[in-house]
Image (cartoon, rainbow, N blue to C red; front, top):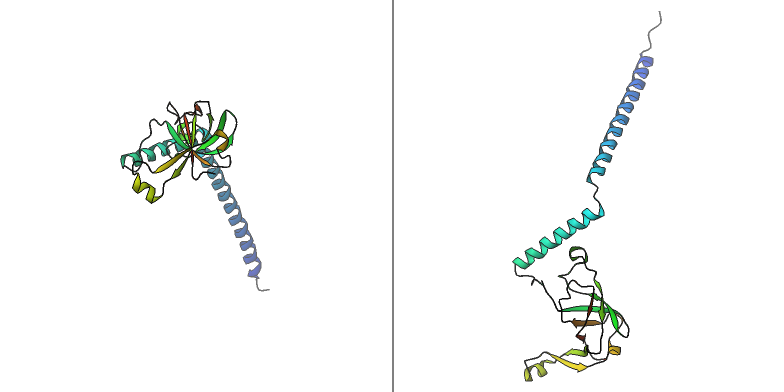
Length: 184
């Protein structure tokens, strides 16, 4: 009698074990992938839900800053600081620079159209030197008359004033336009 060869049995058992383990791992991977896919579908949110969440968070942060005294509430504002995008003969396009107004939370774009009329006062507003302030402490700026053609078109800063609340308006008529910085 020949001695039995156990290596063939061991090799067969090993192949069956590897095949069985592979089958189990593939099944587990498929099951986990399917579960993850369903979770992604459930947790995905729409653009509208995303904006509402942003709006809620922004308004909550604004309220906390206001309650802490770090932000002055601006329920009504008749003036705004803005960067000038373009100027025409009867209007200019500006981008408002207020941190209290947000396009998503307040529903108004940062870019605004400002109408300029014959009654609109336009002037340069430059800061006074410390010596000038010492002589006249009632004002810290010098106002010099300007024309609409003096308004800078390349992100120059202006302060725009109107008769009505302009905080949430995307178009309005200016009563005053102060060109901020130094006179050109």
